[in-house]
Length: 154
Ligand code: CMP
Image (cartoon, rainbow, N blue to C red; front, top):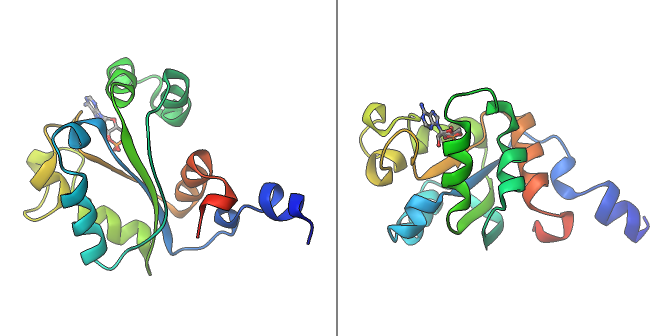
């Protein structure tokens, strides 16, 4: 296989597996010093980190990533929040990754999140809710490819 096919046309995330999900530790959790605590919850729950970076989204990145929410009244607030400081983005691997990770992070609103979940422990409110988790295998693949090239996934 040529370098072009391997690194550009066929990034590793594009194989439609059911065992990967995408996450971000959001600016609120980074600001509040929770990167270590959240990563410890993730790895203790049996997820393997196959890609990870510490980065900051531009306004354009955030608008594109959250385009599905562009008609929502909170869209501008969401873009401002997600761009105000650094995040940690990662691709995680585990059997049944999407569903298991959503169980680990808990409900979108931390008031509704189960005890022991990441959002119950670390989120501020429904807007500043500490972590993102993909909601389907298809979105996990799209979101992972948005943040990582094939060469950054191990
Ligand atoms: P997440 O589910 O990761 O992706 C969409 C994000 O929009 C969500 O996390 C919150 O950060 C944000 N969000 C969802 N609902 C609201 C709301 N009612 N008000 C403000 N922000 C919200």
